[in-house]
Image (cartoon, rainbow, N blue to C red; front, side, top):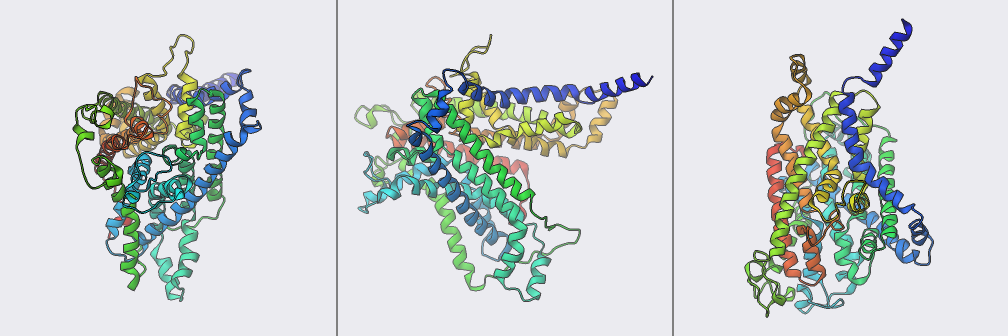
Length: 581
């Protein structure tokens, strides 16, 4: 009798509620995320490739292969993350805690730079500040007769500026959300006690928002060190290498083993800094800022500094949002970036092939390769939005409805693992994973299926997060009632969960669509002439000196991204507390 009871208890542990569903979901996530990374590591440990580790870390070429790019990568990460915290924190403080004029306008504009692809900002910088060191056309400023030094046109300085102006939007969003929770009673009590503004800032505001500052810095660091487009466009022409550009170069020239080793090291570096950031946050004392008492919004009176600080904020925001768009549009119309605002032509948009103009390349509306890339890109975005939201919803549903057990914890951990992996390293992992036949399965390199699978896996953290928000909107008692009437899992999901949360699912799918449409880092290694995507086509044109075509394509990507992002924001209908009066 006792043995029977123990055996029954063991079977309940092994085959508890949701065990089959958990097993299926975990197997899907392992196949999408864990196996590609594991395959990459195993590839570098084979007898004919294991020497790549010594080549990269200690060989005679290791300085140029790894250590110089590592130094540039870490410098970019540290400077960009610091700049993003300072700039994003300053704007968040203005919007949330001061009486600066046009707070809503500043808040909205501060969220826009992250919608603009980083390669768009890099192309705009090149159109403005390019000099004649590399050859080809010079930028608008030098075309006006103003000399541009090499350090401003190419290399580390413009890379730092462009990436900071791109990623500070992420820091702003995180820090503003934290500042919005600061209880105004704390500030008011300090003011009554005679504390000045600096004392309040250092003694109250900064300690309370420290977790947000660390989180913002960690994410901006990870984004900056993994960014490929900006250092490639602004650094490679003068041989400035980062780990991401070196990884791309190694695989491009057939040094696959060395490329995979650099990719693994890049993953470890990004993961280490994110882990340190999480440890710093989890290891500090907690400050409760949200209580049961109502709080009144009390803002710092800037007095005479209101308009000067507003002007300073607008200069930064216009430089990060408005100027790149204007420059890209103008550059797509001007025959020469040296004369950016004169002699405009629509050839780069709707022109027919003319041997005497642009080497016979037709405008993007009549360019069969670009039109095909647009079709593939839109199809890829739609496919990844659907597949990503489906897998993310499955993972979120499983962990929300069946929380007990190690499998639920494993699903959440594996689901967020791609956050630690830079896009270009993830693309390299999928070349190692599905680029060659696996048993009866054919090689998928150069196919639409590989793009969809890799993008679905890479964007899974976003789809899982959206799925969690969707599941929280649907009460568990509704599904429990359906379960009692005999409805199965598929029936409950299709008849209850999805219909009730369709707006949230659609908004999440659109955001995933935007991320893959504008992405370059993930797809740059998966690109083939038979399976082009817009972002890589734009990069190729820019690299080959056809800046006008690259900028026109980028404007198309920008329009799609912003329009879809605004649609998603409207569907979500989530109020942002720092934008409210």
